[in-house]
Image (cartoon, rainbow, N blue to C red; front, side, top):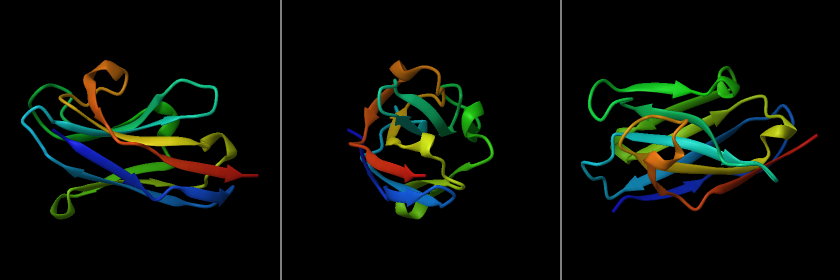
Length: 127
């Protein structure tokens, strides 16, 4: 079973930056993608970025939702089994709980594909 543990959230002023981390363990053959999602207060969970294959097998690439392009950057450290989400020029509307998740495909629009989730890390941006 895949375990994911997020860290790095906190209270930041608008314009600042944060790097979130997600430590991953228990990889199985069912995991071909790791992703970042967020849930803002009063809103549904939405995708931010993912790295992996868009099919069950195939080449690995990084994908972002349209809202995340430009200020968000996802990276990984294979040796540490950790993925990161760098968020620059933070805005109050970025306030949310950020989750790391694992899936068989890198498809942010299909939440049902993401079978394993971390507990989340809170990001609060003050204006």
